[in-house]
Image 1 (tube, rainbow, N blue to C red):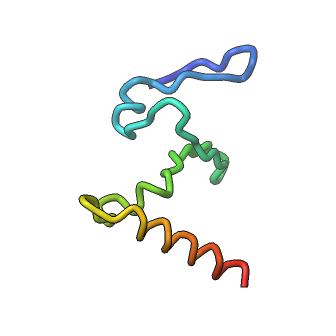
Image 2 (image 1 turned 120 degrees about the horizontal axis):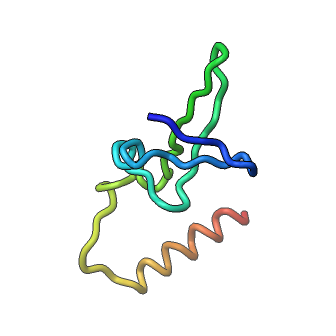
Length: 77
């Protein structure tokens, strides 16, 4: 696959690459030069590292607010 660099030094990521890496609008890429070759890495969104680790369901919003306030207060001590 190839892409062309425009006069503004922009290029298009080929569709097959975007699909394979599951890239979306506003995703970020890391560009590195390794032994004279360009390597591009997709930057994973940190919140996705926690996927499936958060319990969801019925909860107590008042308790959640109180825990958040306690955490903020602890940070300011």
